Length: 251
Image 1 (cartoon, rainbow, N blue to C red):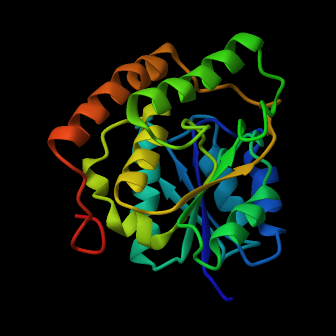
Image 2: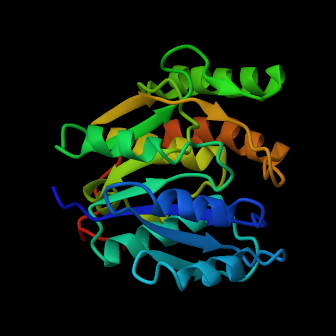
């Protein structure tokens, strides 16, 4: 199967990680391509990506945005770019090696024959597979997923996971301009919408390792958005059921 595969990595001040991550993805078997969406990193992350494009001109891509516009909007920008260029499978992952690049192959393999439309790299499908997180953060993340499942019925154990593989039909079917959330809630909203539209989801066990270089972008506002956002999302789904994007691409 000669599928076109694109990995999306949003960045803001990731100079310590981005070059190593680029080479890790480029060295994978299967011809993965990489699109970095950089939010005007003051540390020069975007320039480092440009320096690597000399070695990988056909496979390494960069979108530079002005200012820190948020994780959710970065992914929406990447999704639209991928759909316009007709990639078959589109991946989300972090730049900081909390997601193991080798697991991209595993996520792809479970979707490649179209048995599933969305593969989720799950920290909680086989217990709690998180390394180097404080216990308080582990518990907050784990019970956030329990909360999401209780409120929404979403049949996913790691609702806030940000390591995913989409078939293009999922992203083409979602009204991307109507996705409203930014952080944790963005990841929940994308899974919930995918499920509500009738696509097939599967969780693939991974080991999540906290970053060792650079600075975390987590903030209390992200958790607040997720807490209230899940309730609003559920209410909206009751009174305004999800409908697929009839245009086949983004509106």
